[in-house]
Image (cartoon, rainbow over all chains, first blue to last red; front, top):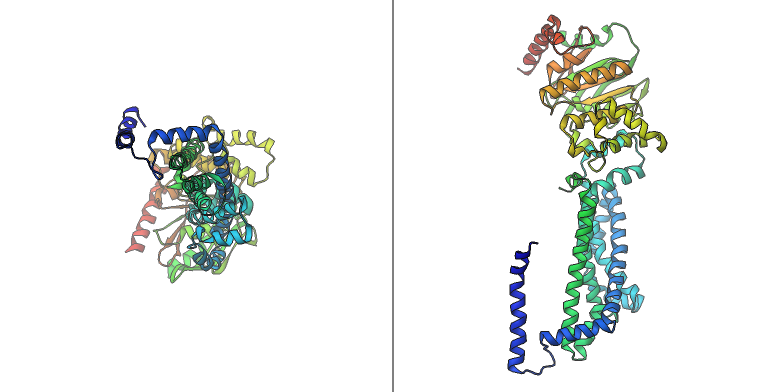
Length: 256
Length: 270
């Protein structure tokens, strides 16, 4: 993003914040549900200083990244199996159609009952939610591999494992990475939702307790923070993607 | 009827009487309702260069895939060195038509050659020297670290040749390998291919649309009828080797064959 573009983009939010601050001060509202930008900034600073933000962020990241690793990893393995064995795909199709539409959030009561509160519950629900996008994208990536590349593997008499590691995975890696990026966004959403709804951990829990203890300044500060975390997560994954897939200029050919 | 009888007897007329290496016996194959090949029998001898020509839909590529072990005929059988082909053979190399889709875009030129060596279980320490040798052989010595997308079409096809040679092939199967290249590049590659094949005594089966290319390269030219694919006629090419882009193409026998096969194809299509 160029400097002038960034400045243009900042005009609207900055003027809104200024307007908000000025109107709060002029009207002199004392509210349990509203806070001025300056109060939010102070609350944010305090939360940062006493380590609340750091601790809560670590908890949220641990749950969402842990769940993403498990759900995405399983999605990767299952998608390779279903992508390569059409019979397995037909066998699994019905189960997938039944299970996939279940909202991860609807499983919170089940997770509380079986796993109790804590990391394992959050991780399990995030894993469930992130499994599907990686599975679906992965199967489509594998079934769309250039058939001639698979023929090359057969003609050279590569073993099944070699075909997967030397041809199928490299050919589909760019698509899998896109799937993981989408799944990372899902992971954060599900993780914070679970924290707000049930789990006494993470940014979502801090947000919820600030709301319930009538601290709008801290609540808005955490809301702002969770947005920043999501933005940073996506940005860092994009950065990794560009680094990984710009080395070989033609890699993206297979992703087109 | 006469054409049919010529087709049946032609393979046996090959002089030099090399041992037969590849045999198609009464091959029949359909994709769905569409009959692709109908009772195709063909014998290919050791160190022979056979070109398959015919319009699209005559099953040229299908025949090639069968001897490559990529496709099993629904009836009839394909044998290689006396045994039935059921899977790809280690010393049969396959050169694909679309080089841009047959090379691994995420591997460099040397990485692509290395794939064949890895598949052939060559120890890692021996690979770099062999890769250098193979790339030099096809004139890509200076491009070892380039990715396929950074190479021209002709260079990519050379790279595919190098990968095939890495298998030390006894048989080289080629599916319209030069079809997408410009005339000059194509002629250069034709001569290079003949040189490589002659030194290694490789048996070659070459599918092409290009009549002149077939005559220029082949010891025999097999013309196929389309819908369903059948062997129409086999033409023996009695032209001296090594072939030369100027003198061979001006040779009276070349011109006679060109006329004969051209007339034949035109009649077949009429």
